[in-house]
Image 1 (cartoon, one colour):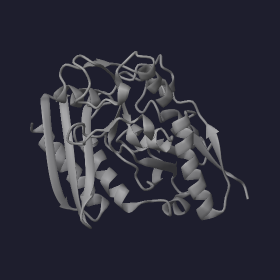
Image 2: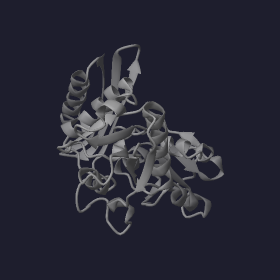
Image 3: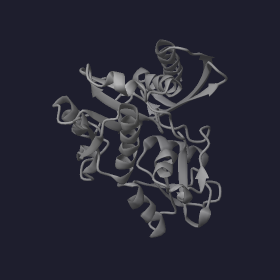
Amino acid sequence: MIALRLGTRGSALARTQSGLVAAALTAVTGRQVELVVIRAEGDDVTIPLDAPPRPGAFVATLRDALEAAEVDLVVHSFKDLPSAPLAGLVVAAIPARADARDALCARDGLTLAGLPQGARIGTSSPRRAAGLRRVRPDLQIVPVRGNVDTRLRKVDDGQVDAVVLAAAGLQRLGRGDAITELLDPDVCVPAPAQGALAVECRVGTLEAALASLDDQSARLAVTAERAVLAGVEAACTTAVGAYAVWRGAAELELLAELTDHRGVGHARSRRRVRVTTSAEAEALGLAVARELLAG
C-alpha cells in the first residue's frame, strides 16, 4: 500500500505536530504516512509578517503543494490559517485541542506580576502586546522571530527578560519546564484556534479516513472563535483574541477582545449560549464580533 504524503513545515514544532497526526492516521487506516518538509514563506525572517506577499505566510506554500497533489494532506497550527476557506481544500479533521493559553517564559522563574519595572518582553504578536500593556504598561515590548528554541534562547542570553509563546507548542515539544506562568485568558485572550491543529486535504480524497481524527467539541469551539476573525474582518496584524470554553454538556462560552481596529480602541465581549452545530457556533462568533465592533 502506497504511503500517504503529509506536508509539514520544517520546524521542530511543526514536525512534532505532524508526527502526532501521522501516527494517529496510521493507527486508524493501517497506511504508513511519510512527512514531506516544505519551507513556508513565513520561515524567511526577511519577510515582514505585517506585510506578507500573500495571506497565511506560514501555510500558503503547504497549500500550494496540496493543491498540486505533491502531498496528500497537510497539518497546520490552526491559528495560522486565514479565516477565508480555499476552494478545493477542506479541513477534514481537527484533533482534540491542547491548552489554548499563552505561556510566559521568564528568567529566574518570574511571573508577569513579578517582572521588574520596565522589563523587556519578547513577542511579535499585536494581540499579546496589547494584552500585556493593559496589565503592565511599563513593559518594553521587543519584537522576536524564529522557532521556539530561538525565542527561549533570547531569555537565556539576557536579550529579553521573558518571551510569550503558545503553551500548546511548548508542551508538545516537551518544553513545558520553560513555562513560568500560564497566562489567564482574562489577562491575555488567546488567538482564535490557538492550541488546535487543522488537518487539510483536497476535497473528495481523504475526508472519510480523517473524520475519525476529528474532535467535535474542538471543531465547534474553533468555529466560534474563527467566526470572530471573519466578523471583524481581521488582518494578519489585527490584535484580536477569541477563546471558547465549554460550560456543561452543550453551552459554549466565548470571550473575545479587539484592540485598535476599524475605529475601535478596545472592546471585550463575553457571551454564553447553547451550541450543538457548526452553524450555531458560527452564529455565536459573528454575534460576538458585532458586539466588538460596536465598541
